[in-house]
Picture 1 (tube, rainbow, N blue to C red):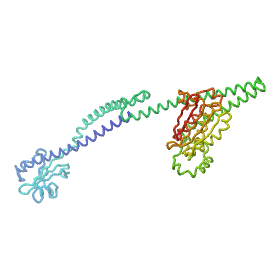
Picture 2 (cartoon, one colour):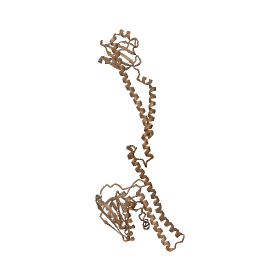
Picture 3 (cartoon, rainbow, N blue to C red):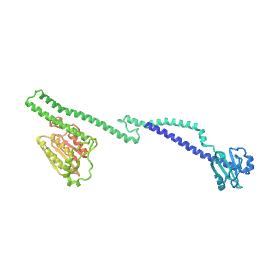
Picture 4 (spheres, helix red, strand yellow):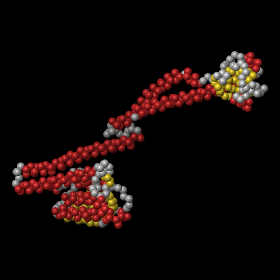
Length: 476
């Protein structure tokens, strides 16, 4: 950046100097011509007043006077006298300055003279007797003057360029200094002292920098949590397997150990599946296609679309091979039908835990991915069952409120303390870790729910009282 600014400033000055020089030469040339014309007009007036006959002119101007050439031309263009050329000259009636003098009383031009082999200024004036008095003067070339002063001009130009280079370095340093200071102190630099045009740029960079640091910290924490959570069931599996291998366990213990190994392996498999799922949702490569028509236009096609979606949707969060964003299998989904399907699938698990689960409400159409919506409902219901009380209840309600489809999962469980309610959607965060391990919880269910909600541009609310239960509402 500094190099470019310096180069362009020096180049600008150089071009400006050259352009100024040529413009000045053109201006001085015109001024010189005007001055010569004025002098020649004065000389012509003086000569015509003193002598107008060839004899008088011959006597007075045989020698070079003030570098002037005096010519007297009669009415038909014949040269009757010329101070610089002796002998007969060709007819001058066709000369431009002579014709102008004949027409307007005086004429002026610049022309190359074959007889004198040089460039001359010509001025002609018509006398009272009809003859033409013409005087001419050799042009002192403006380029000759320029060549004579070339060394001085080059010297001045070099000095100006050196001064410009020095000033450009100082100016460039002062321009770039706030940017360099910002780059060296990206974490703490304020907006004071920064160019107004760069403030949005600075704020964007700072926000991105903070996001990167936060993301790095989250990944580090996530890696540490994953390592810790995976280590626990693996340690149990390894310990029980070692006891069986060494023959220290009897037949009853072997059955018990095998049960514990199976339970730990299931928890490990569930955790790995949740981690993979969360990674897919967190990658940012999954997005829903834009809706092209409203729910009302799709009422008669829901069943057909649901069938087609279930056959061709596949894993909604699967990324394509080249890492580009993959569109989830979005469609118009009946939220109530999806909720009832999930509840029916969880009745056995609820019964095993002594929990009554029900689904109520009305048909509500939403634009989204059927597989992800079912996963969201399943995770909410699974948590409601897992952290419930004996003989408790889980109620799933779907209805439209204030023109928006709403999904609510309400339980009569242990509840969540106020200080933990903002953290339950964090990965691996468990209010009661011992209960989570005993029931097979991974601490990732609500984190997955949060990502699915964000993907569908929905909002989630949590209300809970310790000992009374929890109510989670998702607004689509």
